[in-house]
Image (cartoon, rainbow, N blue to C red; front, top):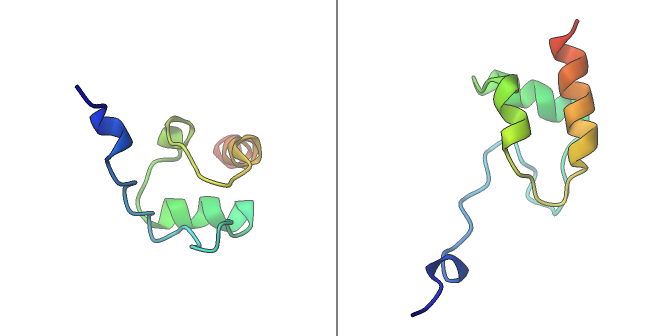
Length: 66
């Protein structure tokens, strides 16, 4: 039996991700996330490659608590 998860390709990155191994500024990232109609409350459930997850969460909650 083989592990099918190891052979699956990564899903395509959303359009608000810069495909340079890095992300745009955290505030721009969160703003673009909102513009795409995604709920900020869902953000902590997502995983991001090459990203400072803690910084994204801090900015997200700062925006939510305005």
